[in-house]
Length: 242
Ligand SMILES: Nc1ncnc2c1ncn2[C@@H]1O[C@H](COP(=O)(O)OP(=O)(O)OP(=O)(O)O)[C@@H](O)[C@H]1O
Image (cartoon, rainbow, N blue to C red; front, side, top):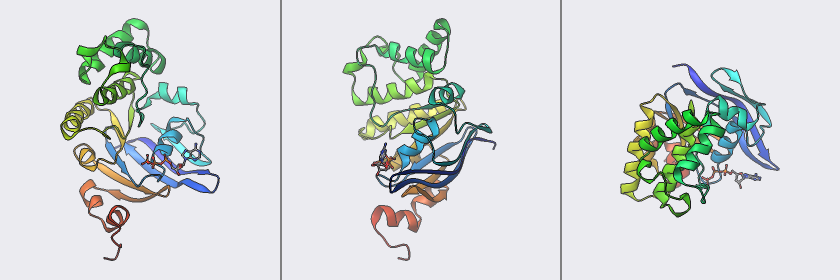
């Protein structure tokens, strides 16, 4: 599987706190990769480094083999990197359709007619078409999460970065979101998903990486990783040699 996204020795520190410590991993084309790790481990910061909202201190980031380390965020988005945010912040005074339209025209750079077609298709796939003319300010949490997903998809990503999109949802809502994400996967999109709701991740991802103190400490088949002593130690406080 050819790599669509690669991090090679990425470094980042905020003062004395190292949040990306020689991070190297890759995402295969069409693959879904899960990212877990304790609060403050550096997971969201890693997305900020990948999308270019934060500069790296060292190392390289490549998209489809091209070095994008020094590219500004907007150029990375046009090249196919889009993300959802942990705390959804839609334009509340605009409708769902208008929020999606901004992403399609500004994120993907589409002309209005093409953007409209894409928005209608994405809103359909993300279960929001019925509510396209509803103001985004009054949505439920699930609807806001769906809109996060829709806005990212309207940027026409090759790589979709999801940041804790299942957090705060009921089991039923979570299940419905998982179905939507798996539906998007069938379009061939590659996904990196940071999530604390592990059962949601396990229903979607092909592989897991574990980050602790900015370091990748484990990587592999999701269930094997969840059962590993290293992960049990971090999450449950069980000693690695127990
Ligand atoms: N702009 C910043 N300036 C200084 N410190 C920051 C900045 N952004 C994040 N940090 C710190 O970097 C560390 C990693 O934060 P980050 O949000 O990446 O963790 P996380 O793994 O996503 O956590 P969570 O699971 O709670 O979302 C934390 O200690 C955080 O306070």
